Image 1 (cartoon, rainbow, N blue to C red):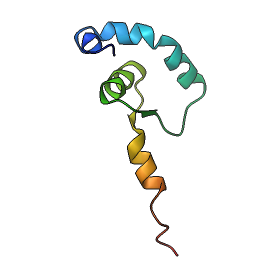
Image 2 (cartoon, one colour):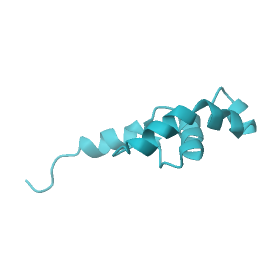
Image 3 (cartoon, rainbow, N blue to C red):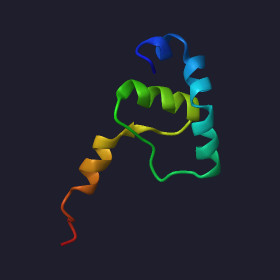
Image 4 (cartoon, helix red, strand yellow):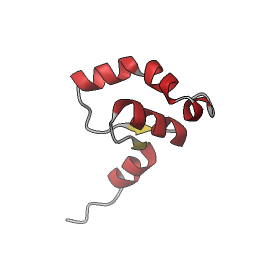
Length: 68
């Protein structure tokens, strides 16, 4: 996102992530993760994929199995 540049000029994010979108379109992922909220927002906008913080997946996967 380059600080606030991606927020002010979303077309820069779309152009910079064009190859990422091409790869995701060809090989869909089970999850789209990010370590930074603004990057998450930019990638979600540019790719149309539901990016979220890796922390949420880590928390989910580290829960004890409730089935015993």
